[in-house]
Image (cartoon, rainbow, N blue to C red; front, side):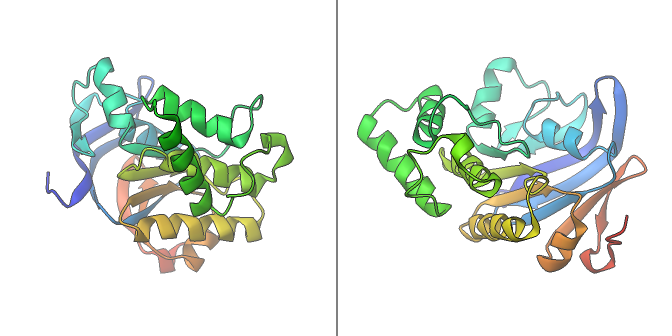
Length: 232
């Protein structure tokens, strides 16, 4: 794999359970690239995202993500890979029984951080990056959907990952809030990280064009953002 590539798939097959959803998958993502992943429901978008983060094992082909080979990846190696990734979910997956700071503190504790001063400083830093520096004391239910998604992005940034995987991050948000989230994601990319975003919101791609990969008829193909049919 080139040292400039954060993701490299060669002749890979992507499965959902025992069902083959994508075959002959060949693509690379550079270290500071923003890439959209599109396709109809069931076309393999989420399965590919889950293969990248080792939630689904790679059964055929070769793939490397953040310097970690996915072939024959042992369970004990998965945390090593995950620490190099930040994951942004559509449905937030925040812990509803604790405030924003405690949500972030939980992740840092689970990934080996021990020094309280360093933990507090890191939490302050990532909340400032997403414009929530004064909302750390709030409970998730006290935040809007857009604010909750910003917390999720802050959480994804905690361990300074090389790659952000965003699976439909604007799926539950209104257009204005979606714009705010897109600007944050592109700021992350401009800071030197790669961002791979699965989305069905083609209007966003028109507004914020970037390289686009499409899952279609069991294959992964390059798509021209300006030729995407927003009614599809």
